[in-house]
Image (tube, rainbow, N blue to C red; front, side, top):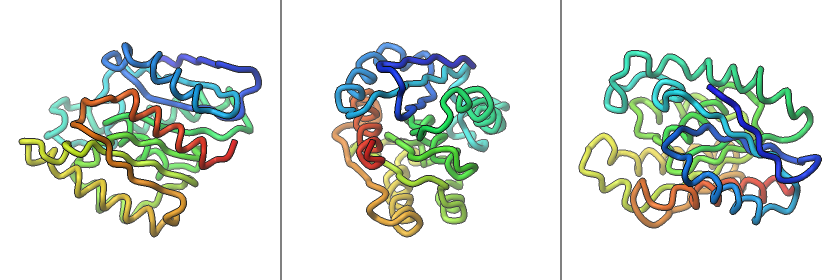
Length: 215
């Protein structure tokens, strides 16, 4: 696991923190440029480069997602790294934790484990993981704002487990409206499947969170 920091301006007023992996590297520059263009205040952008997408980000095992025996047992270590190695670098400013797919799932889960994050930006999160909705029903996020998005073709996947994602995301949004209030969460339907405009979706997710925090 490696942390990389990119700070477009001096004295950042917010830290955007994104777990990412090698397959996202080609789109990161475009994503960060879009976020900075939409921001009204200087930001710090932190990229948490994980070694193994499934192992480092899955909150519990689900063999439909990963058959790696380590998957589902290491998310706590990832969150510990964030809290002990990353957050102390930026004391006193709000942190938006966000990510795409499994990283979006991790962000939502992490927000239920601690109150370190002001907002969560979850773009196309993998909420079809077995047991997510019952977990979310019993574990409200300890954050102020939550952004959810999903591609309008993601729930038409041929894989029955993946196709549950639409119902799971709708259920999560309904729960958030009750837990945080409808003014503190949103669900945006994007065009396309899971691999359509990943960087743009995540940039819009972070931008919404920034607007909600009124920086």
